[in-house]
Image (cartoon, rainbow, N blue to C red; front, side, top):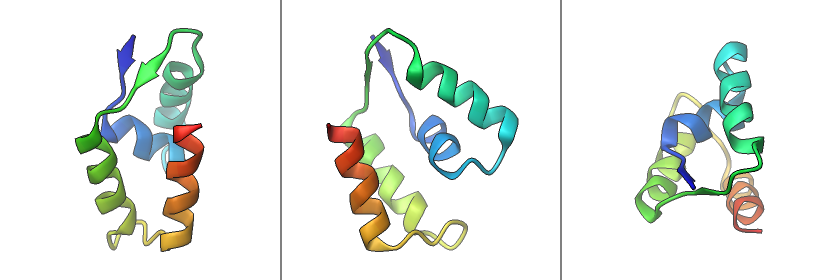
Length: 69
């Protein structure tokens, strides 16, 4: 099982760097299960709400709901 960190999730969700997005997508979509710690979820929300990305609250809720399915 692979633990995903905040950087992988941010690259995957924002697709702001195509090469890093491809690498993140490869890890996330592989057949091996992945896990995300509570602190990574907290940090992900903090980063996405920050000035660099400015995700809206409803967008972040959608991201989290999608990850928890």
